[in-house]
Structure formats: structure tokens, C-alpha cells
Length: 107
Image 1 (cartoon, rainbow, N blue to C red):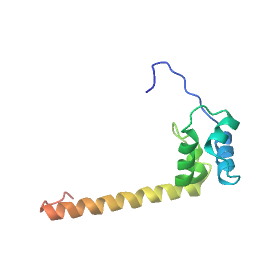
Image 2 (tube, rainbow, N blue to C red):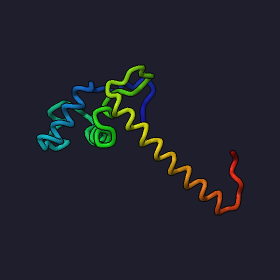
Image 3 (cartoon, one colour):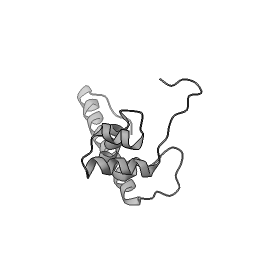
Image 4 (tube, rainbow, N blue to C red):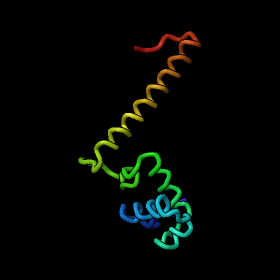
């Protein structure tokens, strides 16, 4: 848990991409990458790799705040399409539950 006034270490997109490349292409372990790049959090590389697998390089970008222009428009569109598909599936499940309970849905 964070302590009030605590400063967190941030890493550049370049460092993140380098760490992912070392793991994926060169087969380094997370521990070896952390030591090489000076990363103190042992879980940090796992988090970056999860984001990389889910969203590609777009997932490694700092996404805080509003972005007017996305550097990789295609990946952003793919992410939005995946979100839309997930929401459609959730809606189908919800509609099925409503139908099974005999409740009329709002239109």
C-alpha cells in the first residue's frame, strides 16, 4: 500500500521495450533483466510482459492522462474492437439472464 507522499520510480518506454526484448528474443529470466536494468520491483517485468502480450507495444506506453494522438492507431483500434466484443458478450449474457427470469428489459 502506498504511503502518503511516497514517490514511485517510473521507467521509460525505451527501458520497458528493452526488458521485453531481452525476455522474448534473448530468453533472459525476469530476475536477470531486473538486475541488468536496475529494476527494484521483482514483479515489474511480469506486469510489463502481461501488458505486452495483451496489447503489444501499445500496452507499454504511459497511458495516464488524455492522449490526443496515439502512436500506433491500428493497435488502439484493435483494443477498442476487443473491448466492444467483450461488452457485446456481456450484454448477451445479461439479456439471457433477464429472459430466464421473465423480466422485461428496458429499451
